[in-house]
Structures are given as C-alpha cells and as structure tokens.
Image (cartoon, rainbow, N blue to C red):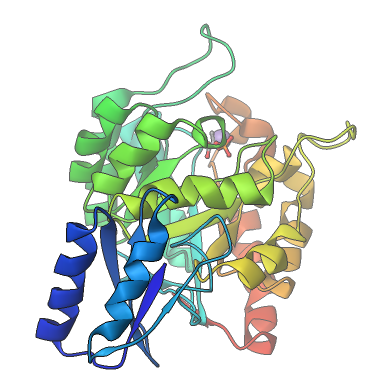
Length: 338
Ligand code: PEP
Ligand code: MN
C-alpha cells in the first residue's frame, strides 16, 4: 500500500511510519519531487487495515499497489531515480560508462587499464576479484588481493570502482573496498545475497539472470530495496536464446520495457551479451538509442592474455573509439556523461 502524504513535514511522516510499523508492516519513505509517500510493505493479507490511516489529517490517500514489485515500480515513485556511485551519477539524464577488465589479474594490468579507460572518459572502473566461473577449474579471481589492487587503482586514477560479491559473506568486505557492489547474472536469484546487498551502505548493480524474465528481474531488485537500500541500478546483459553466433542475445527491448515499469536506472552490458569484441561498439550505440542510463564494458590491454573473457574485451584503442562513437548519440538523447 502507498500512503500519499499531504504534508512532507518530518514529524508527520515519522508518525505515519510509526503507525505503519505498529500495524506490522515495513515503512519506506520516498521523498519525490511532487509528493512524499510512505510505502508499507509486508504480508499481503490484512493490508486493508492500512486504509484506516486515511483518517490522519496529513494523509491524502492510501492506495493499493497493483504490481508485484512494490518499491521498484513507478506506482510508488513516478520520477527516475538517480543513483550516485562515488561522485558519479547514474540515471535521470546522467549516462555512466563503466569499464575495465573482466578480472583483476595484477597491479600492472589493473593500473594500465585504469589509466586507459579514465583517459578515454569512463566514469567508473570495473574489475572482478571474486569471479563466478562456469568451471571450478577456471581462474576464480584474486579475491582480497584483487580488491586491494582495484581500490588502489581507483584511488590513483580518481575513479570510483565496482566489483562483484558472489556470496552474502563477501558483501561487507566488498562494500568496504568498492564504491558499488555488483551482483552477477548467475546470482540474480540468490536471495540471501540480495538481502545482504540490501543491508549494505553502498549502491548495487544488479545484472539480469540469463534465463530470467523482466518480472523476475524486478522482483529481485525488490529484495534489495525492501531491505532498505534504495540505490539499485539494473543491468541488461543478454539472455539465452537459440542463437549461437553470439554468447547471449542482447534484449534491447528490456531497456524501454523496464523503464515503463520502474524508476530505477537501467544500464546495458554489451560485452557479456555479445561474447565477442567486434560487435560491442554497435551494441553500445543501440543501448544509448534505447534510452539506457549507461553501459558496462570489458577492456583489456592484451585480450589474448586475459584470464577471463578475453574474446569479448576491447583493447584501449577500441574503447576510445567506442567513447567517440557514442558521444554524439548521447547529445541526441539529451544525456550528459556521469
Ligand atoms: C562479469 O561482469 O564479468 C560477469 C561475470 O557478468 P555476468 O554476471 O553478467 O555474466
Ligand atoms: Mn566477464
């Protein structure tokens, strides 16, 4: 249920929050541009009791939320959410480019790539320290040492960093080092991990599961939001289809569809969608044209030597070309960088 306030006075809002909690529901206050609302989430049964709050003088209306995603949906918040990562903005007209290697491999590798992507205009540096690999025999990431190297590279080149947490236990340490926590496609429905990320004090990038629907994607975002973390960015990274030319199929339609349903920013990962470097630039252009709020791209100085995802990584020169190519499109779409 949404309790639409006729007042944004903190005392009035706090009173409503207390009443909602007394009725056994969790209260999430959303200060929008046009209105302040208190979203009451919890057990669907007995929700009608919340309508009694309409009797309060500073409550305008109590409305039932029809969609299953209560906090992620536009019913509760009409305007676009802007998420801040380090000093960079994502959403609401701010286009964010995240770039870097699939995995942190060494200080030399990370520093070389960080310098290159920063010079080319990237807003956030990526690099996996805990890697979710299909095979247990593949490189699993440098773990804590990888986090340290990534942090150092981010500090040195003054760029915020994003890295993945693959278990709930890793969330606090990843949150300590990184500016943004990534939840990978394989973990989109790892509810313990989602809840842990919801308790963290850092923004979260949630990637769409390769076999998950948009509805399931938004329900996973709901897990994070319902734990009290409002800073969630969604990432379309390709879904599995019968096509074998590409690793996945970029569901570009997901961008405008999600935006109809949700106020959360949506970015696109053309690297994992394509699985091949040679179509990453046109897919990045498609992302901008579809209205995405950013892209996340894999970049490696020596893709042939990469310990993971070399075949889909751009060399720094090609990444520079990508940035040059999307710039005029961003202007057309009315977006500003970062
Ligand atoms: C990654 O970003 O390197 C990654 C593993 O992505 P995904 O979870 O989308 O496969
Ligand atoms: Mn990768």
